[in-house]
Length: 384
Image 1: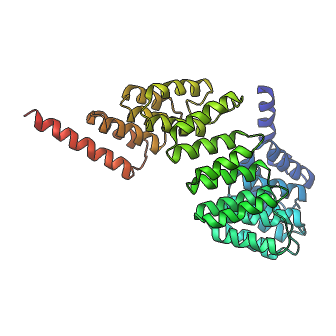
Image 2: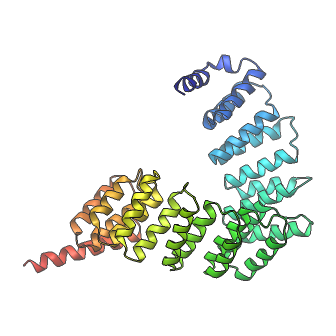
Image 3: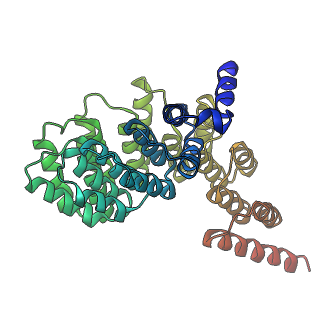
C-alpha cells in the first residue's frame, strides 16, 4: 500500500514538461489522476493544460473531468469543463449530456442543468430522472413533480431512481394525497418492488406521520436492507412509538443485519432518552463502540444528549469527547446538560471552549446559557 502511494505521488509530481509533452500524455495524465480519485489535482492539471497548451482533450478525458466535478461538487470547475467542451470540436451525445445533467445537479446549479436539458435533441429516462433528481435534491420540489408528470405524458415509465427522487420531493411538500397517488404508480410499475422505491415510501409515510402505512410497505419487503430497517426505526422514534422502535431494532439484529450506521444508533439513543432509560442506552452505547461508531457525529450527538437529559453528566462528557469532530449540535447537547443539570459554571466553561473553535452559537446555545446564568445568579443570592 505504501509503495503504491509512493508511486502515485511520484507520478503526480512529474514536471509539466513530462506530463504535457504531447496530447496523448496530457490526456493520460488527467485520466490517471481521476482514476486515482485525485479529483482536485486532475482539475488543476486541466486548468493548467488549458492555459499553457493548445492540446485537444479526448471524450474519455472530458468524461473523467465531469465525474471529478460531480464528486467535488465544484460548480466553478463544472462550468470551466463544460465551456471547454463547447469550445472544442467534440459533440456530446445523449449519454454524455446525461452526465452533464447529473454534474450540474450535484453542484446545485439547476439553471445550468435545465439549460442542458432544454437543449437536448433527444432524451431518455436517465435524462428525465437526472433533471428530476436535481430539482428534488435542491429544494425545488414543485418543479420536480411537474417534470415527473411531463415525463409520464411522453410515455416513459419511471424506474426505481425516478420514484426515489419524486417520492422524496412529495414528502418534503407534505402532499399526502399526491404521495398515495405516487404509491399507486409504484405498485403498478415493474420497478415497484425495488428497494429504492420501497424505502422512499417508508420515509415518506413516516414524514406524513402515517406509521401504519409505513409499516405496511415495510412488512411487504422480502429482503430488507439497512436503509429499510433504519427508516422504520427512525419513523417509530420520531413519531413517539418508542417500544416499537426498540422491538424493530432487536428484530433487525436477530435478522443478522450487523453493518449498522450512526443514524440507526442515533434513533435508538433518542428512544432511550424519551424513555429516560439511560442504563439501556449505556448498553446500546457499548454496542455502537463495538461497531466502531463512537466517533460518528450523528450517533455521538444523540448519545451525549441522551446521557445529559437523563442526568448522567459524566457519561455525557465522556461520550462527547469520543466524537471525532463535534459539531454545534453536539456542543449544545453537552452545554444544555450541564446548564439544566445544575452545573452552570461548567456549562459556561464549555461554551468558552466551543467559541475557541469558531463555532457560532444558535438559539439553543443562547437558551442554555441564559438558564446557566439564571441558575448561577440564584446560587449566589441564596448564599447571601
